[in-house]
Length: 195
Image (cartoon, rainbow, N blue to C red; front, top):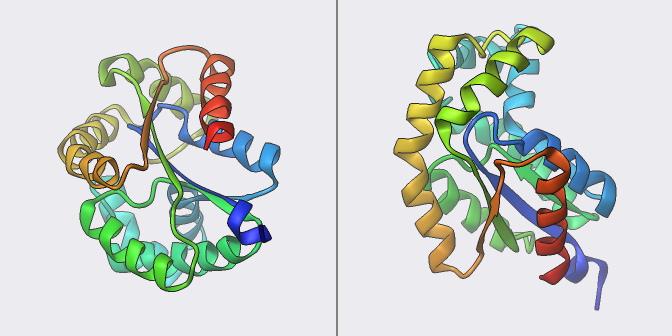
């Protein structure tokens, strides 16, 4: 078996505040893969006022999905490089079936396809306090109460078709994300190691 055949290629799906970033970092550290967080990449572009950042800022400030073309421009080169090396954990991409279909075609053509999609399942109403706390502690411009509610609504609208996409391919597993980060990690690690 080659390195590429063993590489972790994991997608984390979950509403804002479900722990994708926290768990993505843990996966990256434990398995020696790259954590590719679309939201972090976009926020960095906005902060540095790059061309991508200026185009993405308006969507992000309204809690809307950033246009696919901008996300691809940031995420795809990293996924292709990481997928061919040690592997990756994707956090926040894809967010729609359109992104998933486009990504699947590119990933499969380059032999770096997602091997496992994990839904970090949490009740959206329980996430609001987590997100408000994060807004205060991290100072994230896209974590105002209005934007948080909009992001949770967008997630609810977009997630079911995305989950069906991965479920139909036999790649989807659900982890209960309502517990502590350590409890979620124990579940996630068991899932990753069983595949």
